[in-house]
Image 1 (cartoon, one colour):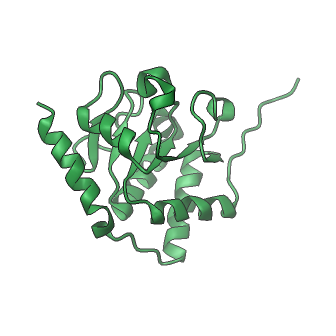
Image 2: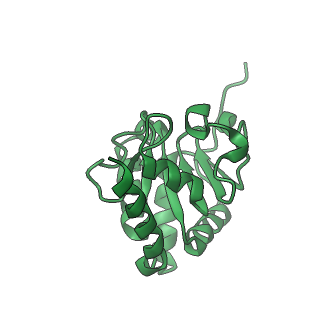
Image 3: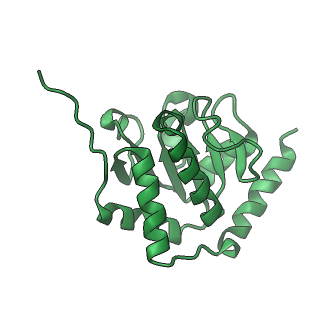
Length: 183
C-alpha cells in the first residue's frame, strides 16, 4: 500500500511569493471554498484576520459559506451560476484571484477560456488533485490551509507589511457600482 501523505506545511519561499502578489494587486479577490471549513475554525479565524489586514473582497462557494461571516462587509456574495452579479464580475475583472480551498469547476468558471483572463491565479489546497485541472494557475500552494494562512499572517507581521486600503479603493468603488445594479 502507498498511503496519501499531503504536504502539510509549505516552504517560506512560497509564502513570500504569495505575499508579494498580494502587495502588488490593485483588483484582488479571495475565492473561498469548503476546504477552509474542512480545515477547521482556526483556518476561518486566520482567513478573517487576512481579510481584515488586506481589506480585499471575498466571495465564497456554497460549500465555503460560513468560512467568513456573510455579514462581513468584505463578503460580496456567492459566485457562480447562483451567485451575485458583483461577485461574478469581480472574479472576471480581478488582477489577482486567490483560490483558498475551492475548485475551479464549471459552475464557477463557465467557459474556461473566458474565465478571468487577466488575473494572476493562486490556488491553495491540501489536495493537489484539483491543481491545474481545468484552470491554469500561476502559483500553487499545497498544504493544510490553517498552516498556510497562519504562516502568511506571521510573515506579514514579521516583515511589518501594511496594506494600504487606498490602493484598492477604486476597485471597491467598482464593486459597489456593480452591487447597486444587483437588485
